[in-house]
Image (cartoon, rainbow, N blue to C red):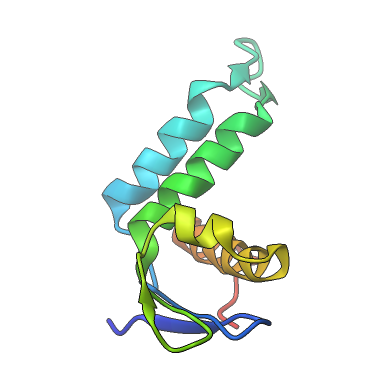
Length: 114
């Protein structure tokens, strides 16, 4: 599958794989579940630490990130550090797309390709 080209508000081009593999999705779920509290009577999750959500999202970024092109057209290292160095408005656009891809992997009914 071809990478998705995502253009940020400042003009960066970020290329992402369009989907997670099953193994990558399981890794994401393991990170989320590692800090989850489950009620043994009902089986319902009661508590998820926010830090686990951020850690899991960072891991998905690592899985999906292919290439980053700067505003000047130069290829930058395809790392979370590069995304984290961008203006907030650009990083937020990238992470919204990461969340969308993750939701699609789970088969959530709300997830639709945009």
